[in-house]
Image (tube, rainbow, N blue to C red):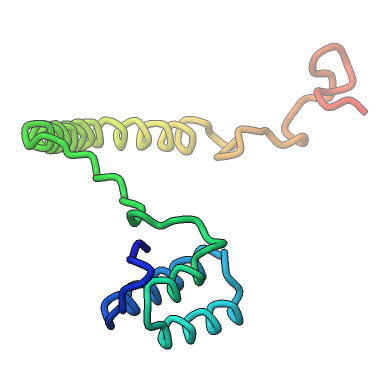
Length: 145
């Protein structure tokens, strides 16, 4: 905050000082009590010297911190990426719709083979112990204990 110390100040300078104090308070440089005290003194200030005393132990705030500008992409890149995304979705749908009957046919053949060709074994693929001859595979049966 730069003012001439001997000149009288107006409401605009007081408002600017209060805004600067609020920024210092928000940044954590002032406690709430210090902020309230200095704001009261800024409202009563008559000259630039009265305001300068309020900022003697605080760093200068020449300009507010500017946010970096967002990166701009060219419209050509946006259109190209949109078209590429749409093509990928269309290819995916096309492939899935054409492969789905083959997947369903394979699943049907597998399940039908397990149920009908397997005989009594059924879905589990295991035979019952009672169906096996007693001397299967070198005596003692298939299941050894």
